[in-house]
Amino acid sequence: MENIINSYETLFITDLSNGEEATKATVNKFTGLIGSNGEIVEVSEWGKRRLAYPINDMNEGYYTVVTHKSPASFLAELDRLFNIDESIMRSMTVKLEFEPVAKAAVETEEVVEAETEATETVDAE
Image (tube, rainbow, N blue to C red):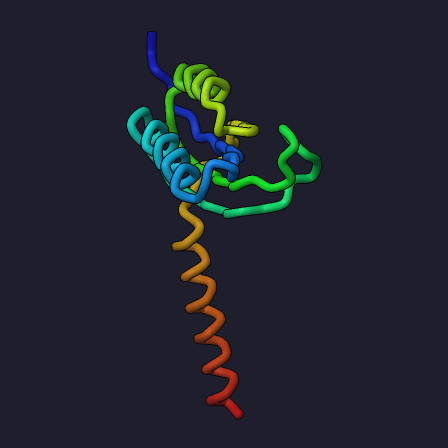
């Protein structure tokens, strides 16, 4: 059977009660796991955020979004590991319908274009 590679975006919220080092270790553990089973396009750490509603009597969590390409068979294993790890409060994976592009490159191009336009406007005056 052929392994089909799809593009996904995985969001997971890590418990902050064990300390900052434990939170970073959990984030690194799961990003490493995703990277070893597929190709990571971008890792976006949103950081500490307030939750919409309490989860396990916690009001804050550490948000991480990983955009990646991986086989569909890996998602079941990733979901299982998220459910086993007690430091993961919530997780969600969404299949992307488009080819993911690292946002840093796109934002850099937009900034350069905006700066060029601003310079041209100043020079014209």
